[in-house]
Length: 305
Image (cartoon, rainbow, N blue to C red):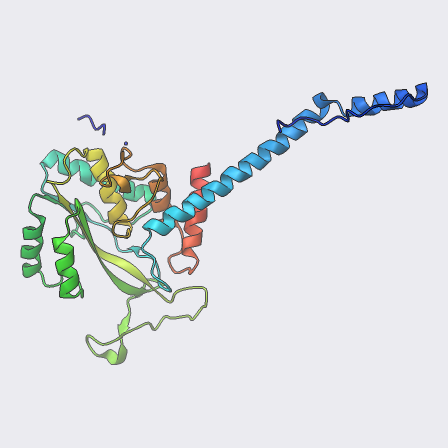
């Protein structure tokens, strides 16, 4: 199945008038001129110029990475970035068996490469990828059958999500957990009470509890996704399914699969920038309050390599 869709640096030698000097002085001047021969100093000058150029390019790349991460990462103030801590179990519906298996295998491969936890083959789905021509009807019917489908979100937020006209709708459910992985207890032992972290350490530079993804729904509107290849769809699903991405994120000129439905030429599957972001998300400390900075540093190493 074919899936093709993604000045001059010169040595300044004094040109002023040279007065007539004795022969000894003339010889000394010739020696000084010989020491300043461009053929001998040129390589050092070129090396210096190359160093300046590399540093300028690196600084430019740093700014691009900062803008990219700032545009796509859903990072609330004074709270951790969401990611999977429990094993991910992708479930694909609405496609033929072969296409569904391709999406499933692609998402699983991308998750492994990023370092995200994957459940064994037989597992209970928590990353739902559904392709349908009637997303509104599906979500309403699903919500009526499962009262926990949208977590504790209010009815207005749910209605807005269902009625959106995006080609892909993504819904994230998450919960708080102690940074060491322990579940939070309920204050006073009262069911449904305020969550309490009995493992809190109180470090100023680290979160005592972090937000972990518990389920993600990726609903693809087949009417608006025409012309998209399965390579592209798999990359897009993996990017929004493994990381919480800002709704309608605008990554600018950065090469990313997130521009798939933005009317610009998308990449074929995940771009190196997408891969670097996912890898950084799962290889940095989620409890570190400087995680965003660590993500940017990790991406710079991978992209500049």
